[in-house]
Length: 190
Image (cartoon, rainbow, N blue to C red; front, side):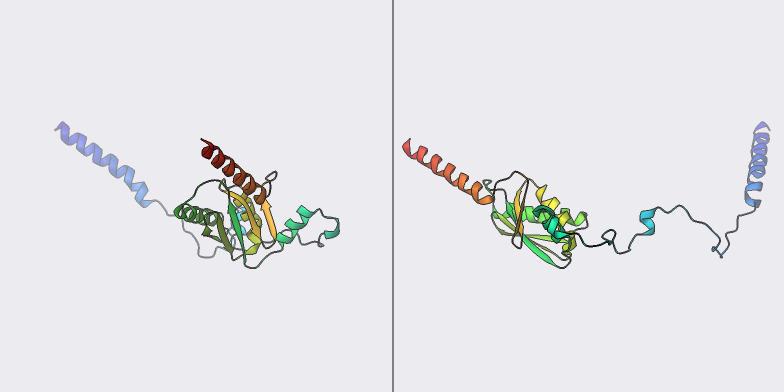
């Protein structure tokens, strides 16, 4: 009998709790949402998908008063069409064909994650060629290449870019050749 009373009490409590929940009035969302203010979007979301602007379009800079480095950067910034160039890898490191192809593949995948459409292809054991559809991304690509440990310099047209303080590639290759000759002559003497 006590079990029946407990069961009956539980059933009554369950019905008492479920009654208001089942009979509660639902909130109606109207079809006309013109008066609803949605201020939860951030500025990036509002401009998503819009073509990027290159900043305030003011008067063109005075090129006659620019130093050569700033002039090169300004000219690169104006590059908008397809572009290609070559990257010289750091000399002195032995590399196989697979190593160079792996570097090209890895770099192509990494720059794609940064929204830069560039493809790298191995040319020889120390050179990669890159192609870009959008030349306006060249400054980002320059920064990326010069931050890579394997890269020594890269060339677009007749412009050569390398890290500040690095000597020209020809001088580095000369040093390596002299070192090889010294090492070879010391081995021959033994």
